[in-house]
Image (cartoon, rainbow, N blue to C red; front, side, top):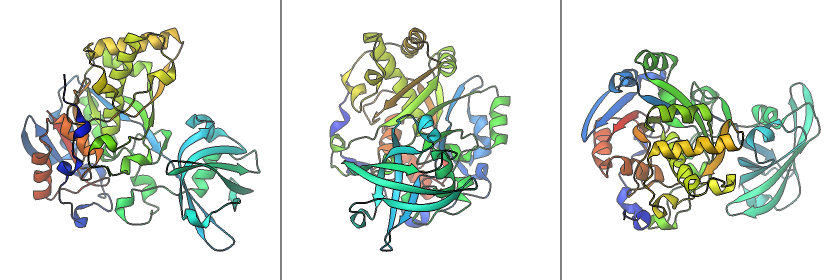
Amino acid sequence: MKEDPRHIHISEYSYPLPDERIAKFPLPTRDQSKLLIYRRGEVSEDVFTSLPEYLPQGSLMIFNNTKVIQARLHFRKKTGALIEVFCLEPIQPNDYVLNFQQTNHAAWLCMIGNLKKWKDGQLKREMTVKGFPITLTATRGECKGTSHWVDFAWDNPEVTFADILEVFGELPIPPYLNRDTEESDKETYQTVYSKIKGSVAAPTAGLHFTPRVLDALQEKGIDLEELTLHVGAGTFKPVKSEEIEGHEMHTEYISVNRSTIKKLIDHDGCAIAVGTTSVRTLESLYHIGVTLAENPYATEEELRVKQWQPYEKYDQIPPVVALQKILGYLDRNGLETLHTSTQIIIAPGYNYKIVKAMVTNFHQPQSTLLLLVSAFVKGNWRTIYDYALAHDFRFLSYGDSSLLIP
């Protein structure tokens, strides 16, 4: 029986992070950031361009190709009050691609800034998109927790919701940067391989990669594959409860192609993950396979990985078998891509199944991401963070990187 992580006290995952250690902007050249290497308890450092030297030839590296959307929309009321509507996830239609293609109406779950000034009524904004003058309206619907249903409507069928966000939206950089979004963030807060629109936060471990590092990895004989997890705003949500049992993980949407699952099987179900979002997706695949082993005809809803699921089911099926179950599911349903969602929390007590090494940045104190790292390095996270603090590493989204090999 493995340890139940629900009673972990988040206060044990704190460390001093002075504001000056938080990188407010990235380095001018992405791949010149520092790289901390943690290998079986030993810590050293290098430059990010050296990453390929530390990875075994023939290994499989997996990236999250999600693209950050310009999800913040600003409206000004006649009274002069400024209302911010932050699009979190699509509701109608609830598929990202379909929602971005809508041409007169789209509904999203949104966080609302200055909510008390928006009691009722429509918000309106006149704008020009692709040469067309349009009026965008926002109507507030029911409250869902800390978020609200918001209906957007506009009066020109030539314009999609994606076009509106592109022109009218603002890129949501992390709140802890304590600064406004700048034009440069539109480029620097995207990975060079971002493709699939849908995130409201960047998968930041990927921000260090450049075409020359990707080329060097391939020259080393490392297989590169992609999957998609759309990062939600919940990624910044601090754990407020004393024990992590009281923290509700946000749901994030994942899609993984059949070819990626086959490639994982070819590599014995082992991968190097770039970023905690790739980690969460890869580990979720294992638990989806466990569900399918029990119930081959599970629905898409039943495949969703619940927060505590990995700690409640003790199946010991090998990762390759779990992945083969997913291939079988895709075959039976005539699908090329697995689409589902995950709420997985990875904390000490979790047994990693697929991820054998990870590239990740330095995370906030008392965050679920720090719990994920601690579980990976068998509780030895302080050694890593003490070294980073003592050796002038830059922290958080625009900060430096680490390669962890337990």
